Image 1 (cartoon, rainbow, N blue to C red):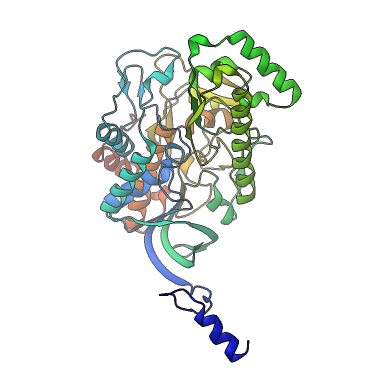
Image 2: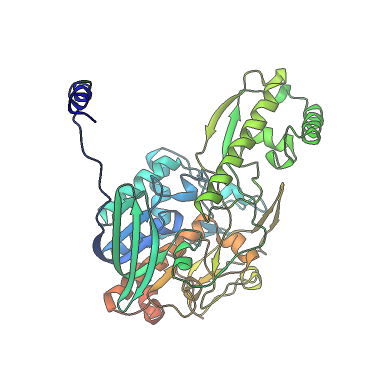
Length: 446
């Protein structure tokens, strides 16, 4: 550019603006920590809070803008189940945050002494997801946890004393040297980067975009007519059966909410997650436009719309112990049990759910070995990617159970970092003692 043209360009800059040089690539910095947790969702948040409260230098990395995962961004703001058969079986730090969110918003808790039968959802605790995220963030910061949003790992390498993890984000390139590494991505993404084996199904369970519609009076709705219209729209390709799980009546009674499916939902890569989110929003628009054609829905409006489609399963690890369906439904108490789980077997298929409730009195347990990748050192997982078969995982993946295993993983990782050992070598008695000291309900010894 000639000098006079360059000066003319400068003269065209708005008042107060300055011309800056092109931003150079970020320099790679190195930081050290005791415990590095990748994934600030249901399990990772609780693991970080627990490790921080035990005095471990803790870093929590979250690719999105807030903590909480399924409870917050995913919109499943009714976490459970914490109670079984008239008594509480999961407590600790997850319960602390859930009840704090309910109390701060004056939300009522269910009557946990009243049996639910097969209506297990009656014991779900309804909270405001965004408020939970704010409280979780506050608690982590008070515990000394370093939060790193908008970052993801791109390389994971074992070192003699732990792990080297390279994180990249907006204008950021950081290498973290960690004594203990915890994968709470839900996708076992760190396990994959570390070159360890993972399992997944050929066809994933469908996901769900949580949204709610309103503006109609159910008393005025001709339900047989609406089902006939929906069937015709599905046949014509205007709707998909999975948009309403084939049942317009159930969809309308709930205002949508958790009443749709996105087939093949996958969050294991950015490309797959993009496709999943686009499919979820496209489904919502189909339903909205379909209903708007009918006079009964003239005043229909969108009352709630989550930014992401929730995903139920991707990868699982191959652990030192694998929780099977038989273990789960029989309530096996593992010798290294560190937490309870309680939820029906909850396998989703396109357009429907195949629930199988537990027999009365059964309360399954989660073994420490299911959180440790087989043959690994200084490495754990927490959340839905734990070592389990598909049917057991369909129940283990719910929030209360993930919070419980997150707390157990946080304790174990902090103690391992303190002692300079690996998670499988931390005395079980020490883990159980610290869990109980921090409010967790620990399964009985066998």
